Length: 250
Image (cartoon, rainbow, N blue to C red; front, side, top):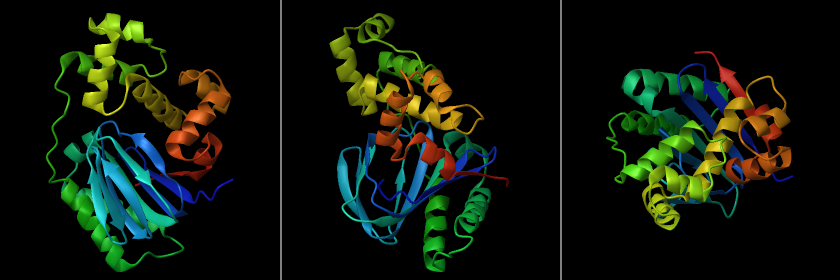
């Protein structure tokens, strides 16, 4: 198995998640984060980040912000260490800047309980987190039927919508629908559907049910189908992801 030094720290009930990829070589295919702001920073090494089709190299001490729904990918040619803070849009709107920074600092202390990151890097990361509160965000979906389908898939990711069913739901041809959806969302309807199933599986994995139950509840054919899609998007198998998660009481 490849090196997968990844930890997920969830702030209980806060809509905030800190991801610490340490000495990782994982690459992530094109995807987006639904209603989530992502603040990232490279602690060592470098990666190539593509956001909305624009490529850039992120190097040590460089922070970046990915807005909700922005299609992006991460490509790694060598090992890197990266922090990522994922904050739900609702949390950004409901808590003030000081609260967000304070909660992030608390998670950082938990993440580096036994191995302290450099103080300068922590301060740079917290500055980037604070700046996220000042970023304006407006949904980029301009086509009504795309917005309707996007919301339907988000609400029912476990349902297997066929191209014909999506066409009937939106009252447009399936070819025009797929082209328009990809143009607006950055992913095809199928890609978006699989991604949302994986996100649902991530939530379910924190519950006391079997991986087979998770697979079927999230809309996958079976456990093997879940594992294949999950590892492609998350970079970990469902069991590895489950063991890497930690719920933090704030």
